[in-house]
Image 1 (cartoon, rainbow, N blue to C red):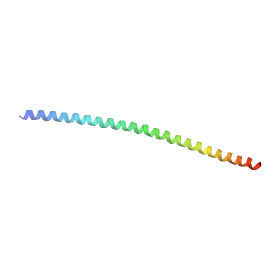
Image 2 (tube, rainbow, N blue to C red):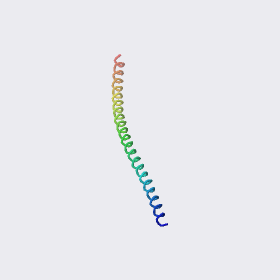
Image 3 (cartoon, helix red, strand yellow):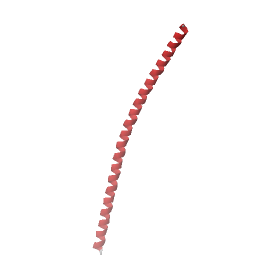
Image 4 (cartoon, one colour):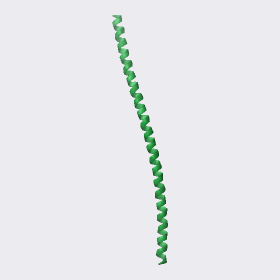
Length: 80
């Protein structure tokens, strides 16, 4: 009787250890996937910030050009 019980406990413990190992591998795989996705997100956000700064500079330049052309137009209209 003692021998059968020990065998059953050993099988249950082995099954539990295998399930625990599978769970640990799933957790590690998920963690790795999340880290990779965070790196991609960080790269995308950096690119978006860079493009936003370039866009802001371009809008600023166009605004300055618009003001300069507006003054030129007023000057031409006043000379008439």
